[in-house]
Length: 211
Image (cartoon, rainbow, N blue to C red; front, side, top):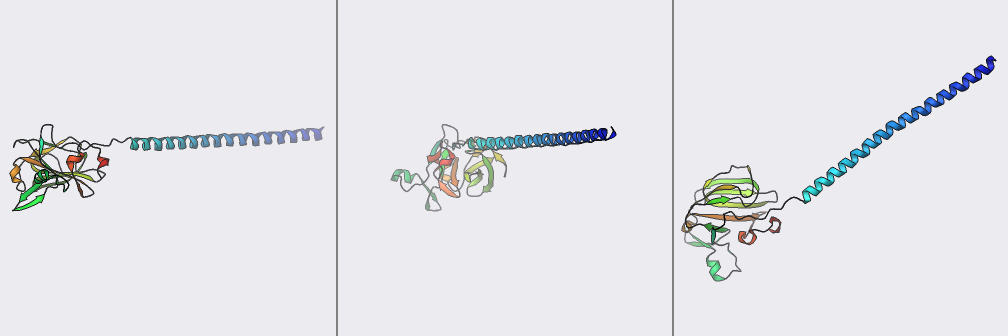
């Protein structure tokens, strides 16, 4: 009787041990499943975040080059282009110290009246100086290395290294020595990677077309 009881207890012990072992495996598996699920969820979130960031970058608004002056203020001296006809080329030359020089920008004037000068692009003020020949000079540069320079300003309302938005008033038009014949005016220059471009050609056009 005792022998049979011992065998029963032994069998019961083995059964319990096996149950505990299998139960342990189940717990471990459940823990692993939970961690795997968390990892998969985290991976999905990271992939979705990356996709969202990529889509936002692709949808980034590309500015059009904005006129640096308000409507009604016209160009009085053009960007020099060797392919223009003779009359327009004559209007694209600057006489300074007895020498005719090609105009490297465009000049705006409003019947000798002072007017607001606007930021043509959004960017950072990379230059602000009061030049004895050119007057106040401001340059704004964006992340694509496109820069717009505003010369012959009588006053400036932006600070060096500060960010400005397209359309912000950055100063007032004025007079300078270099183009004294124009009296009160704005001299506007457009560059990309230090190469000059005709601003008149690109006003209203996407900045990524400047090349």
